[in-house]
Length: 66
Image (cartoon, rainbow, N blue to C red; front, side):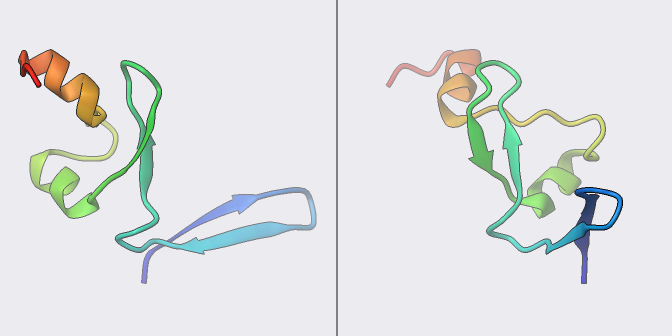
């Protein structure tokens, strides 16, 4: 089981289980939030050095006309 833990105050913490439907990132180009597949991210690199673009910005970067 993997989870994220954050301190809300000196007396309160929050723990969130990591599942395939609750992992998000912000597009580095436009800031749009997208749900991501961690398995795909890990197959391409690591969390620290990887950026995930949203669908629209990915198409624009690849020159896809749609």
